[in-house]
Length: 297
Image (cartoon, rainbow, N blue to C red; front, top):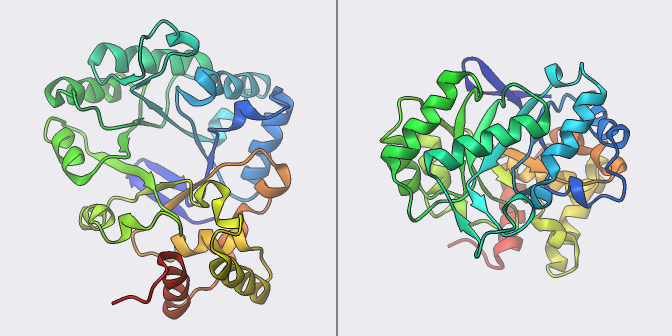
């Protein structure tokens, strides 16, 4: 599996395992979670994507139980987590409304809770989960720098930020923001033309893509011609249609890291099929044309 350097000291596997649904599985036992991780590792997938809010603030503890049961596992992984969404569930059930909090106190408390729940002394990458309209960059930036200085966080980035949000936060930081995790798939193509990817490419920052299969909507028949093309290409290359859809993202020169989320062991075992797919420029545009529903201008 190809690896991507986010910093000179930190590299991620090109495909990332997303754990946002891990708490929805009928089996959240340490043994079952470990089986998912081991399946990823067998393919060279070492990067696990978490967030404090996943599973109503339970997903990190589910991962932590698996890591506690298999102490040697943590050293084989890079762990990503996120903070700043406060929803009135779980540990934040007293909140009156869902909101964002990028204050230094909240970020620090969130990281401490994540470390405790996952049973680790550091996270490899911390992301601010959503742009906060009330963010004070002169408070948020130094708080993130401080977490890196403390060793509790190896690197920081953002998620769902537009270029101007990214630049605002970066302007108050000593450390570089190393990624932006944004929605990208054949059903979410805006980033390819609205400047989000171009902004990152200009700065040689590798983006992460959440929901790279459109939350499964790619395969519900809403775009039958696109689905037929994905299946045709997959049949020609000995993979299924999901591998082709992910390969479409991998083909882009921005070095996109797709974050793949599923609880199915059989599907996890095929994640790396995407890197086997050969996709020339015309095939990429064929899928793009079918995705946007028109010929490019």
